[in-house]
Image (tube, rainbow, N blue to C red):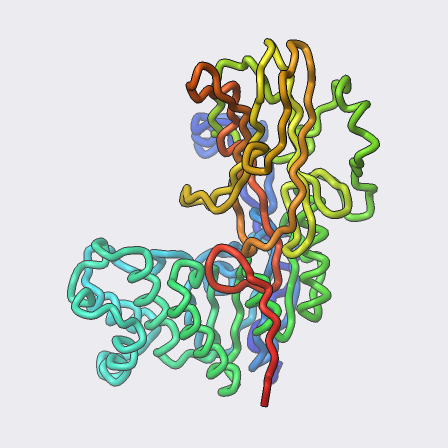
Length: 428
């Protein structure tokens, strides 16, 4: 145990899921012996060791148990089974707001968090200047934190977490809130911690950070520990999990492949491409449907229909449109936006100088856009449309707005929306 900072031994976390509050109430009062809940294991017999001085990343899809295991390690949650051994003083930055009183000022919350970590007021005073300089939020530190932006909040929370001299630092996705310069400062601090022999455990969807900073990576999937090992090996496995997760298939199962030879059959096929994709339940659909988008697909470089596209690979966006009346010069379009609603990129057949002429009622057109994915690694939303002009008026025949997500998988992100794929040369 001398060299182990964190030992997780056969940890399970069971949640009881009830159909409605009445069922929970009946069981609590002992009115029935019948089991009125279904069991959901957020974690199932997870075990791993983290050595002192290691930087370890935990990755996995949403719902894989990443945040749950961190909360158990930090004592926020109790495991249903198993146990956790900790050797060292922990500082944890879990989720935005954890450990902070929203009515208190920034200064008051610094003292509150320090006290919770068993520091005296004098010890906190010694570290106060470093905390304030790192947070760099100016006079807002004297205002209630409920008035802070999310960026200011995470600056203060992270400044407190790393400046109280912990032996073990645990971070859960918090850095995704800060701006790029603050993130750079935080990762520089990571380097200082590593050199000082501190132990770092963090969860992130930023695979480039995982690859760069971690000595080892643990992959969780649906509550199970799937693998652990070298960052590149586990990241490659995670990419396979992402594809399989979206398509509800196992890693060893054949993935459906779609090719250009399938197009003629696809005109009459009743099997929908879109059924393979994760569709946004809150998407918006509108238009007169004089031309109707009856199917669509996002297709990766291997010909698989999937929401997950690897950065710097070719991919296709395909749409099938049925014409319910004669339409002259229809325009087919797609737009990709970020989750904040900003249009990031897109094009249409008019921009690309594709002339369809007159399309007759009853015809089905299949249009495909081929491009290389150089957007930064994160989630985006896809919109599709078929529009046109009639009597000098812009007409929307059919539009599927934010119909599905495109998850860009990347192990190297740069600044901004897209990667210029720069080639770096050291001249001298």
